[in-house]
Length: 213
Image (cartoon, rainbow, N blue to C red; front, side):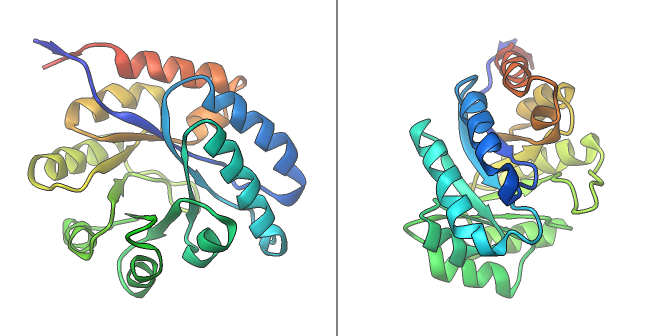
C-alpha cells in the first residue's frame, strides 16, 4: 500500500562567517518560507567566536519568525547566551553530559556523529531529544546512504527518541522517510543549490510523495 510520511525537515547551515551574516539571514528566511521545516542547526565559520552571540541571536530570530527551532552546533553555553533553542553535540561523553546538564529540560539537546549502535544507545539512555545518523564529517565525507538508512530503520523500530537521517542528495529523502526517520536533515543539497528555496520545495515534493510499503 502507499503511505505518506510524517517526517519533517532539519536544515544544517553552511559555516556562516561574520561577513556573510546579513546575506545568509535573508537567504535563511527565504528558505524557511518554502517548506515545512522543524529545525535549523546553525554552524559558524572558524574565527567567528567574537561575534558568535550576535550571529546566533540574529539567526535564532529569523528561525523564530518562521516558527522553527534553532540549535547551535557544539556549544551549549552559546545557545544559552544567544537565546537559541538548544545544541547539537558530536558523540557521547563529557560534552554531551555537560550539554544535557546545562540545557535540559528547558532546551533541546541532540546527538550526532554516533560511530556505533552502542554510542547511539548511550546517547538515548543519557536523555537526548534526538539522535542523528549520516551527517557529514568536518572534512565533508558523508557515510553511504545505505548505511544511514539501515541505522534509521534499526533505531525507529526499537527506540522511542526521535531519529534524524541526513540526506546528502534529494534522492535519499524518500528512502530515509520510508525507513522511519522522524526528521530528514539537509545541508549542501539545499544551501549549495543555485536556488536554495526551490531546492527545498523539490525536497518537500519528494517527502510528501506517497511511499510504497
